[in-house]
Length: 112
Length: 116
Image 1 (tube, helix red, strand yellow):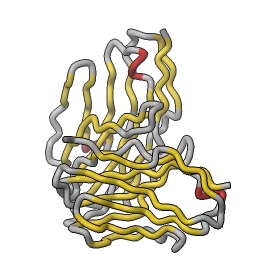
Image 2 (tube, chains in turn red, green):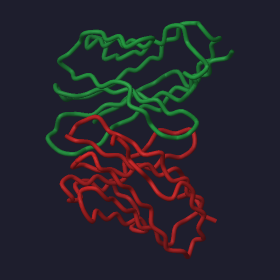
Image 3 (cartoon, chains in turn yellow, blue):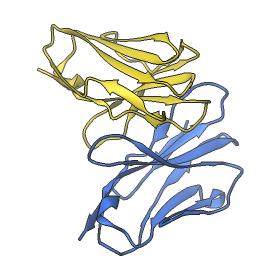
Image 4 (cartoon, chains in turn red, cyan):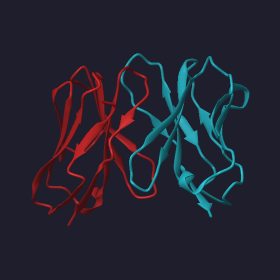
């Protein structure tokens, strides 16, 4: 199994909603990542978990809250988002750091 | 600070032509890794190659080849006999061996259009 699975694939939410993005991998990887990608732009690193501990927070607003319940799962909790947060949110994992990142197909988020 | 520059925003060629995507990087680290990823319209980033800074051998994989030159800080990617399925956005990326999980620094990407 060489897949990173992200759910949901599409999400539309209002600015007052609370929602969560989920990511799962069963490759035994110990590093997991959240990236944000705006249209026609490269992915931007948001969070990195290494051995289930948050190791980098790239000054992301607190309305984004990551969680790593175990080594296979990664969540991104969303609250009070702004329309400019609309983007493709990509999850990735890697066996080692630095290493080859395996990416999921992303969650396309629209904030109304 | 790390930086990756892909100067070609968009390239359009006719099928079966060869095409080269340029990548220039900047880093102060002596040990680092370079990557190429492909992002088709479906959105998923697909790994193509990883090269470490001590391995300057060129690599060929089918119609794909990569030319790594430390002297010019470049890691260029060539597709030979391009096909319509090669149409995608291609990202060059850099990571350094800092001992921690730092993620990738991406270039801005090159949108490759292969016309039938």
